[in-house]
Image (cartoon, rainbow, N blue to C red):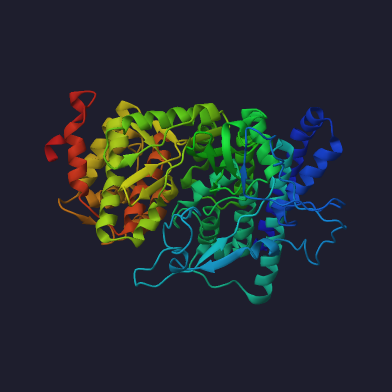
Length: 606
């Protein structure tokens, strides 16, 4: 009966989400748009898209001739602005939908193909690979074997931009997941429970591979806060998130669907004015990258400067609250998130971070600050911001060349060591010298130019500062971890808020051991080979214990900080870099200015 109880709970949750969404947003959208039929049409299309019932484009009967759709559009001062409306190609005769066009999620599953790391090596540098190989899944195994990775080709789809459309879309996703649970329950009744090492997958029919892919594909269609939250979850290890969900979220990291030209131009017209093209010589409608909050396009200004224009998806900034609450509802009804993860605190932090990331004016200020801070730092470059083609939802910056950090793994050992050292040096400087850190560890935010040996840094929406008192104590904790000082780790963890002082011996031991593992690269002088030990697996082995016995969530600062620190470690592991970590840490420590003398209570151990 357990599978059917799970199904009943999920179906009830879906119904409640849909009902609440309808009550909350229908009146608002109708009053605002004055078009009930149009609003309902768009909402239904969004919902069926998210449930996997349609391919994302409405076929319409038209009689005009087709128009070509070039990627790069050139603008001239002497000619009127060309028609770049981006209407879909049309035909002279009615288009008859293909048989089977509306078959559940099967059409999108056809987009998924298996490639190996070696098969991806010859791809274009501009096709940014957004995978973060965390606990396996997409990494070369330690025995040299290549683990296949599911890849997805993004599609052109309008972003659901109204609150009602997005909420109904979540209800559609819930319906799709419920149907998937019915299918899996029936399969288990007939064929039995599949054999797997993942206990949660074995117990819950909700956690089928098909349902996990439904979730990932829906997030790619939805974009916005929903996709961002999925990407945040995707960097967790298998002790925190069930393995099928982790595998599907690897699809999420590869990028979102892209806006059609008509929707893209509407955003540019609204933000920069209808004459935005007069500032450019050309604009490439094929995006360099499509992420959770916006997509990036290459353009050339009148003076010949190549620029990257980041354009925010419409409606995502206004839907952060509702998106995350809808995701929370789906997660709560499935009972898949362990209590030790403290979902409410994680969601609160996610809302705050996403609100900052949606403000491109704030990101522009962050980028200018980083450009100033790193102006004299060898090996780094921060592109300049072009203010006259920027707004709250459009950010234009100087275009910079380079390959994502994970592609550096194909270069020489000397280069990999150099890049690994520079990444770790930057991470330590950001936290302990600037106290201002770019906290998004996406490898595509670090573009290495081998010709100049410079790492070009992009995307500063997730930048934030840290209080002096927090950084003081955190540096002392890092030193204690590096020196295997258990008393120091416990004392600093209590001062920082990781521990309450009431924890059991089991929890304290697991916490201290995790600290020692993280401090291992800093424990001895000389180069540390990041492939010599499996740090992520060692932490994962302790994760279940800490989740079970944890008495308090980590401090708010830790969510973004640990995401960045783990990203730096994972990058060094991916590169197979040998880095003098202890020397870098002690160099920062020797220059650090504590707020008061009592903070240096463990300095004698250095």
